[in-house]
Length: 202
Length: 202
DNA sequence: CTCGTTAATGACCCATAAGTCAGCAATTAT
DNA sequence: ATAATTGCTGACTTATGGGTCATTAACGAG
Image (cartoon, rainbow over all chains, first blue to last red; front, side):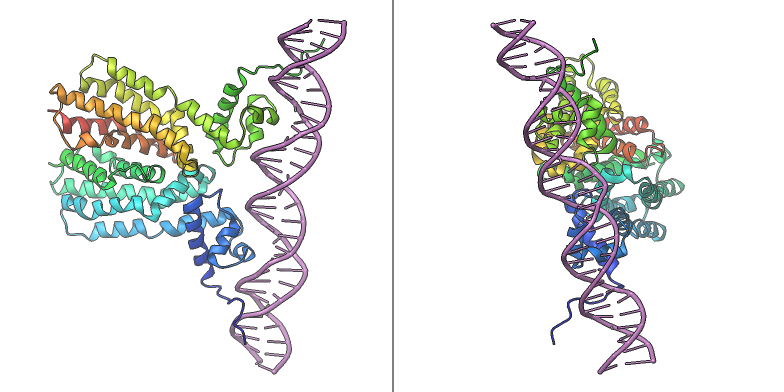
């Protein structure tokens, strides 16, 4: 007669819940987000949420892992298969990728990690191993390949891939705090890449 | 006979309480810090704290204002009175100042702002007006004076003083998250300044 | 169409922590 | 000395929200 009050969908629940949690955390931050609010957004009861995630903290960790997975590995793949010159790669795909970060879910995760990270050491460890170190390695790979090919010359930059990320980091923070105060983050990142290229080109 | 159970020190209390609060917030973050913990550190009762600060939020704002005041204004002063060349100033006092930030109380404030800022718009406004915009203005001032003097040439960097701050921002975040993963933040900042100087020198 | 299994509900419990206030005792005034 | 003032205390109230669990009902098996 009437449609059932709910459906059993064991398979989809975890994914749906982490997605709802991501949205909620993005808006309110971890501490200010109510578990009940997450459940509501996911269209389930609070009780069910606790069936899939032991605690709020577990939920948080699941969110971070969920968003972060894939991205960096995808970039690594591209680097290894591209036929572009090192300079062209930096000006092209790398530049595009870096400029996307400040407006992407990754930016949200970075913000959450800055806020909550210090109280979740294991999460930071995971994030460092699976995102940061891989990201830095990719940059180093591009630079050193450029050197091998004679496009670039060795320099201090070789050991500071962080220089490529610095303007991205600033952009992420700026946007989350001063969204209203204009800052052309694309130009900021482009200019930094320009500086770096000028410096390392043979 | 016995020493009094407490002393009345109306003058000193607010300062002592904000200092205690700064320490507590630095360690635990805003949300996880208990007001009672702050009172304990300041050596007063919770009730007294509420006599000086209406709410926990007010206390937080007082802390931010307290730490931030002075610093930037001091730098502005130095810039206007120095007799160094623009390049020497950047390599000297400016470099020193920037390298100090990641290990200073300012770094703690930046972390707190990233975490709590989005829910305290008036605080962000205050911080932007009194710290960020002044800081950016000082950098611009140095660069444009260099141009007037013929030391530097005009370039895109003129409108992106943020490039000077980017490695500092990254250092602040890095230290707060990955204290254990070595990163020579001094070298990072020095190198960035080197890149920028190379680019703008006439 | 049962009946057993278990996904899902939502009312409930209770620890926590922000904020209050009646009274007390350190100062200051007389 | 005594009284008036007020800085200060700490036990209390209250709301909030994380986490539980007895119960319900969707669904698949026979």
